Length: 591
Image (cartoon, rainbow, N blue to C red):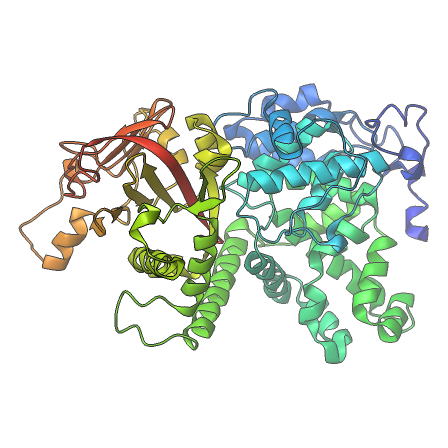
């Protein structure tokens, strides 16, 4: 252990085995106390922290967590971490037993399987850090992550998700861990866990940018030591400095703050690591300078973190003493970096695309997405029959051969794709909900769909009509209240539109768009023609004003369609009333 750590008091608590759940092996866990007893004020209990867990006292809570260096075996985290994570959940809290219902749905049983669990594709083998989990504990972590992947199909790449899941499991049971992770993944106000490769790249480039300004000397030192490989490769591993290389007691203290404040804590700790590394490797006679020149600065930083010479308290004090590094500044750098990378993606993609002389010509990326959509837009006729595409709304007898059938499918997909906002066509469609797989329940619909924006709703009736809506806003907005505290009946924006694919192929945009195109200065949109989306526990509605364009009941079985003022549409099926054969809802990964 480094000499600077010898001043810490090492103590083996007699209740070490009782401090952790049974799926944790505590034999390799060392308890560090930063200062001798009596030198500092007693550490706060959860009962003393709990009154600060309310919106108006977030700053007090932030300072308290930073100052209280609870030892790793403190019982406070079993209650504190779940409470901190619950702050970030959206909508109603999950019902007891919800997780186990999901486990049964995914695995067919709540018993842990003997064979290894196949992890979602967004998890790579190098991400699977188990820390001090036992073999059973790792299987539990695998299962939590697998269920998260099932419940959140828009996650495509998330390096930190598995390690954070594993860390949580050191202080709580499996179901509580899942609820915590679900809250962090769904959080909108603060970012905790990146879920796409794009956003993962944005984070390390954000660290690089803020280091150049707020840890300038350390950043310049790193750049000099990086040599031919360049600093970009070093910064790309920034999360692993924290999640993989820091000693576990240090990581746990970082996570205390992280679960309250979000990813900005990781940014600050990454800068603190650079500052401390700079301090210990400036002298050319130092072991860390020798390590960097011999084996590369990337290996040197990793080894430095594993042998961190600063205590957890000193590491956090260094991180939080960086001046003028505000959340607003970090957000500005993050958003600017994200927009830059997205624009580069668009430019790169545009080189492969023909000139958009017609709105009905999809981009090359769109065609890839359409092909994917055509494979996933399916319904099951029965367990014994093959899948038939939802987009095949006509009886098979209409078509003479499969080629003609397939051609008609592609044409319908191309037409629908051309109606979407151009920026959305750059993203991959992901099936979020289908009545055939997930049942006919509004509750399940909201659980799987409500935090995604935008979404595409598609209905096939028992009479083979096919129609739907592009919904521009999250369905969670149904819970939002106005300044008077009243729940808003309608929500959404003018990007929302209706469409029909059979028997009539047509798009019905918001009437406000048509007024803008006509440039009619005298015509004004009214409240009655700005009613886009509405929902509660008994129904879903798209389009209002003198009628409802699409209305579905709480069992997602029956519906009706009328002309409405918002879209000036005819009824989307001839009878007006319909019985739902299939409802499918799509999100767009990365949107």
